[in-house]
Length: 282
Image 1 (cartoon, rainbow, N blue to C red):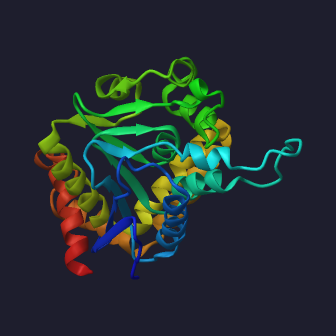
Image 2 (cartoon, helix red, strand yellow):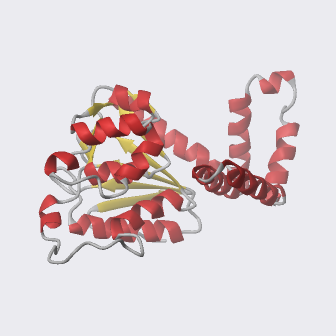
Image 3 (tube, one colour):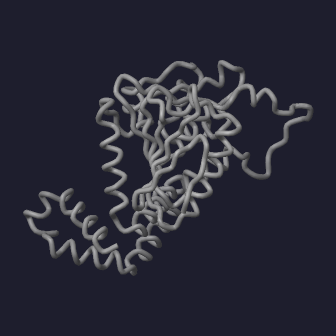
């Protein structure tokens, strides 16, 4: 599938797509960028050969900023607000990334804030740079609230009290705090983050796509009541157990040393070999 955008550069390598955001000067989510992100999300979701998406920025100081405040001021307000019967467009964008059967990774080297933070929080993993990455929810100081999933997603991601602090203070959350609170998976030195994210993306993409996709689907059920999640997990497990990829990889695991003392002591290497085997067969 070919991807053609003005503010986003998409490169495909095997089952990995790397998206670079480039909307100077600070990657504000203008209406043009929002339109491209919306179109991109639909195209990524529909791409059957894709397993992993990495999102990064052409500007290492700014990953993705807030929504264009001028555009928000232009929204019509000459009527009483009503509760919606369907998701707002930005909510739908975030949900599309959160639920699509691709693993979505944010490489946040610089600042992320407002709607950019809300979108990033909908991704599966986020990585930052020690001493440089900063997260800011700047809506309450403007007199509004994070209205692009932030008040719902952030408490689930970092906990209620911490979400309240981030949302209400308008203060920057530094990389070290963001990692400790769980907003960022890990933080790296500036020259380490790119190689790590690239290696992780390729490793995940080397495993059976059905297992990767079902794993995300199952983890997403953790927002449901406990028993509902367990029933869905068991159902997805049974589906995978019947796939050729799963049965071949489980036998391969035994053949290369799984369930031996020597093999179990180097489990990460065994897993990499299983991925290499899958790549050689595709």
